[in-house]
Image 1 (tube, rainbow, N blue to C red):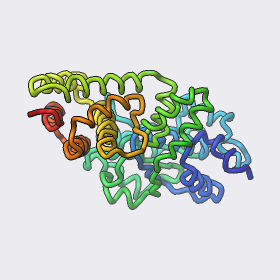
Image 2 (cartoon, one colour):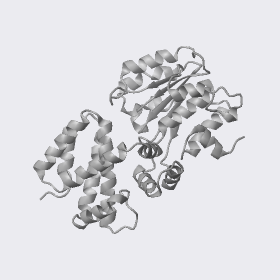
Image 3 (cartoon, rainbow, N blue to C red):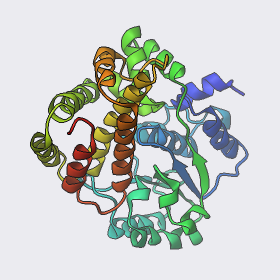
Length: 340
């Protein structure tokens, strides 16, 4: 047997040791389930875990302990996204999966694998799928084809139908320790100060942290949204705030995932302001904006900052409904402190 560190490196997974161990034991014992439900915050590593497990299930290495080997035909094909026996079902242009797409995947799962051991389907953001569309998967879960495995990904298990949850092995992924993320970033060549900032901003989301390290866009987007919050919203009056809401609404369109990213950024900012209002010694997530946060806390009551945090949280929750995004932004920005 190879040790746990080697296993994590082989699977390419950081910070989810217990989940990795559960899946690996099921593989070694030949007791894998026909369906799995991986849950956790966006960018926490659910998709990476699903892809690694798919490789392990169809890896061609004779030694079970060495799967996934990363070098066989199946492992390479999954890495390239060209494996005919792996189906990744995701919505188009930020929209959730439709019932027709789920039915199409169910029909494909009923076919024998083309060349691999299993035919595997991964369903992205299943908690955003309408209940009627989710129900289209139930028959496949009740009578699964013998060589089919389903991996359902969801941010919130409560928004997945109970009939589906009860027929799948639940694997809740938890945020990774920030020090572990920082170490992983430094090992990838990230400068220590930048690694510290990214790890704090990640909130334990290893996927987000690795993406922010490889691509300047997430941090640039964050800078732009915090500039807008501080310079175009908090410091301005009602008319300017409504104009800012209009600009943001046009930018995100109907993409709830894009608006979710903005609200999550603002959530960390208001959390930092509250900590500063109470002179908490904890280092802020947005440590590169410490002076700005101190100045805002000095002129903002802790109660008002807490109400802003709660309003942002309510807006995030509303994204799981059919809320009008423009009206949601209007209401949120007018709830923020600074208005007479």
